[in-house]
Length: 615
Image 1 (tube, rainbow, N blue to C red):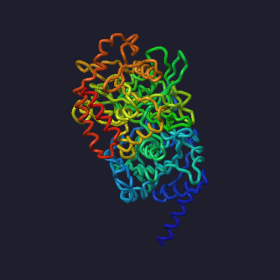
Image 2: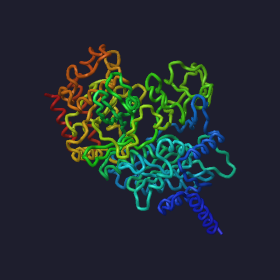
Image 3: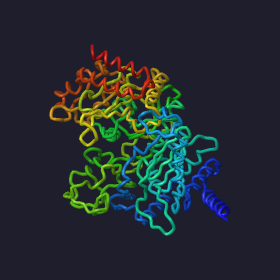
Image 4: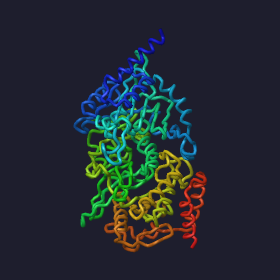
């Protein structure tokens, strides 16, 4: 009797899958059926990305109490979600790279053998979607059919994840139609790990104390369990677009990077340039992605704020796309004074998570406005006043908004084959040593600069204040394979590109003087740094060579309107050999953990830097 009922259950689940299927691709049907038989959902929905689907899911979530609709007159089409207090951020200590060979994951990743991890995961996923709807979410990273585009499917039991995936990717039927038999696509599975037994009431934010974010680079799979939040649940983002895609890129000759992407137009000559930039967290990346120049002569447009995929084009130049379709931004600190473009983008059609709710049905967070409301409902649903002694919004609270609402969006975001890169910018948050801007001495030196990006720890971070926090290429948490091999791949890319390679620069707008005061105004005035970078690329300025790179020569940096910065220039560009030589020792220690996998070219650059500093 038991075997018959089991067979009936399998037939019934297979029928759930096929009845609503919107593809005839047997590989997709077979995989979705396998996951459904494992997770045992109550129903299966194949997502098409339509507005009707959005309306249905949001209505269901509002009725269930897991979404709060915002005031339609103030924030049309927008909603507020509140997560479980224990599910508020990426969980790096529970994030694993499951390559067959441990050395391929490298010392900066958590590694588990694929078979061991699957043996640990499968009992957790067994029945994990019981009582819930299983959503099949096909998505395209990049324009469907584009030269750099990749396709994937996320299976999830989280309607919140479905809504965010619709905003963050090109999600729907056209992506599913692009997955043809025999083609390559990425398989991702997500469960909040909170099955509902018969008659059990659901909660507003289901999740599990046990969490796993696991990547299988050889089989292009992601399995995520226990969390409904951000990069743990939106598997197109860090999991696919960086960790898995970086492995694909190394194998296929391209790069998946944690980079913003800008279009820069010289309004005098109408010449267009494109720049990508890698900045670790808390280093002004979003502000640069939506830069509003404070000097005439430049129009700056946004192509992407977080991830860029780079591939050599037919003409030998390096082309880039933003594979995403939305912004998943940190709310606190985003305001009219710091990022007016972002604020204008958030006019509606936005999902807010863990921000505060105003009395008139809008949202608020620390830094949104100078004036603080007298009363709010905080991110956990409690009354809040300025005297409460706690933030009203969680420090990692988020907004998810379609990129097409950005007033500064470049038409090139739609470009199927990407845009040719003229410059690559690396940045960190350095109070000392690193000058405002410097061009690398070569592509190899530029890779060395990217590999040694670091920020000085602040009082808000664990560790000693001033201690260097290494984040090579801003990819430390996101590289899906051995970081030293990743540096080698960048060096190989330079050999492929040759004289067509973009120029590489380093920038640092966080240098401080006496009393900890910033020497450079930053924000919109960073357009002056970009101005010099582009004029250097175009050969308009010569610069002056230093031990750490080519710096702006006297008079080359446009300081019109901020003449009071002139007395700070010597300090902004000061190169202290003793401090830099001490940092070289730290770099050698950092490289040591990668052993003999560190490319010889980077060791040569370290030796060259020491020699230049000593002379």
